[in-house]
Image (cartoon, rainbow, N blue to C red):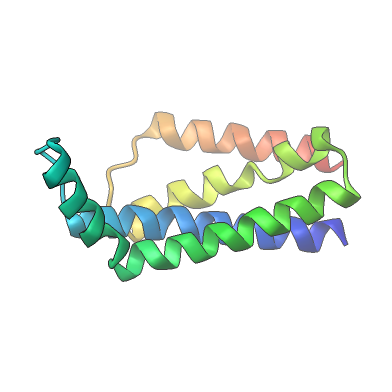
Length: 120
């Protein structure tokens, strides 16, 4: 059962963070930090469908992680769900078209090794 919760947590977290990045790219950088401007920016952001999707995905992730913690130890759950870093790096490269250098790929590879060690 814990592997199902891990899969749901990883998939939902990855989807949520990628959707959040897409939503904020669509919105653009915030330059004006006066209260009225921040309120207008927040109003636009909360209506962004990518951001709304990110909130939903992160909610699913939160409750799946709670369920995982109810059937597993924290020392297992945290490293096992760290595979999200690898998936997010790959999606950043191929979906968001970000430049991912070899050092980031090596970091992702180290995470995979850590997840493999924990799963034994």
